[in-house]
Image (cartoon, rainbow, N blue to C red; front, side, top):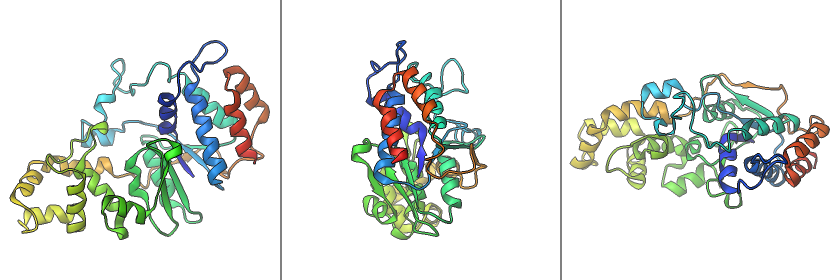
Amino acid sequence: MLVDSAGLWFRSYYALPDSLTSPDGIPVNSVRGFCDMLAKLIADRRPGRLVACLDADWRPQFRVDALPSYKAHRVAEADPAEEEVPDALSPQIPVIMEVLDAAGITTAEATGYEADDVIGALAEREQRDAVEVVTGDRDLFQLVRTGPTPVRVIYVGAGLAKAQDYGPDELAERYALSAGRAGDDYADMAVLRGDPSDGLPGVAGIGEKTAAKLITQFGSLDGLLTAARDRHPGLTPRQRGKLADAAEYLAAAPAVVRVVRDAPVELDREDDALPRDAVDLERLADLQRRWGLGTSVDRLRDALLG
């Protein structure tokens, strides 16, 4: 199980009231929600190995160089190198990291890369076990595959209670893509469609359904662009014009959208097996008392030891 950690703690922050506080009044809603989500994932899905994947760089320079608008609207006013994070969330992230360490849960990051790239690299190189990616980010749908080991995405965009389990077949059915290359098709479709939340404008006039149809019709984004240059009769003059107008964007966007599969990932410990002996019960209990984490830590501990 590869967990998009920042996605989970942001989701927890917005899902729970900041009236959940430590004994000295510091909000811990994100910490408690993160622990609860992790506990439920472990208890329900029983992964044999688990890695909490982190952003070493939330807005990597290589993506900004390719497309300056990438996540530009999220840049903090006080520091252009930092992401705009709610004031009540920032102090909770170190607490989450302490809980992960005390729980014996492996973390991973790659200097200069996002958590998406960490997840992509770990999934790419896995040759032994089936992989489940837990995320609320649809960009990671591009990782689904059947072999050499299966990779599926547990999508929690609507919350964990409404989690959706996507492999290649489910992804192909949901978006009308080719089952044999559903992950690659999705990435190409995402380039065309764009994503305002990431500062990706997409191609004007080409929405999700049209993007999926064009990618499956011409086999890939490259195939579509070749068809447009060759004035293929399967494209309308309007579509050719829209693609031509977006030529600069289409040359840059794939490097932004596609996950880096060979990122130099570093794990904080050698063994990513689901921790049992590695759980530091005394330290977990201390964090629970100090931060007022209540039954959230109990549930996480019980899931790990169960």
